[in-house]
Image (cartoon, rainbow, N blue to C red):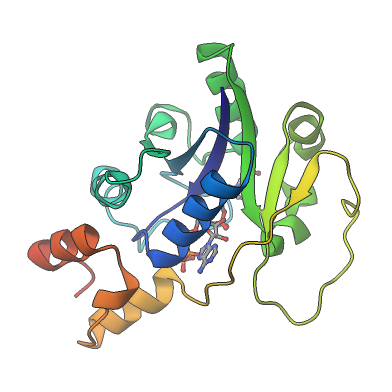
Length: 192
Ligand SMILES: Nc1ncnc2c1ncn2[C@@H]1O[C@H](COP(=O)(O)OP(=O)(O)OP(=O)(O)O)[C@@H](O)[C@H]1O
Ligand SMILES: O=C(O)c1ccc[n+]([C@@H]2O[C@H](COP(=O)([O-])O)[C@@H](O)[C@H]2O)c1
């Protein structure tokens, strides 16, 4: 079984995340894509984050009608901030028969050399990279690497930050969120 791990804060999960995950699940050799909800990204401040379980609930609601997409809360019980290498080692021990790959945007590849033990990650796992909008593509040390697979997925110009700010300003953000996520978020008065 081949699993693609799509890590993120998902604060909240939005249509951009869902389109990418579904595209990769449909057009690659991966059997499933797991949304791994990260309690604390080592590169980000924690202050604006909703509770882990509320973000997980939104991911659960977004994925529930997609057979190949699954929520994953594995990082909730691991030390914080969450370094991806630790999660990969833990998951591989728990599921020795599964082959885990990473899914990341082109922009993340630019800073991948700053991740903890990135060379160990690359030695043991494939990475599926999808395009993001950026100001000209900067060459990285990973260009042409045999473990890195570029996926021609649609480019979605959307971010959780934009959505949180829009909600705060009283804007309608309904089309940017999966329907069940919007309903939950609205009912709970999140980000207002
Ligand atoms: N519109 C998008 N299209 C494709 N990938 C995205 C998009 N938005 C975020 N991602 C990627 O999805 C992963 C998880 O995203 P994350 O939860 O950080 O969302 P975000 O929208 O970038 O959030 P924030 O605005 O709060 O930083 C990251 O690897 C991020 O680069
Ligand atoms: O392991 C690391 O050193 C590391 C450094 C930066 C980011 N990550 C992970 O990458 C995921 C996506 O990061 P981001 O910045 O695009 O939200 C996030 O879930 C982090 O846990 C991991």
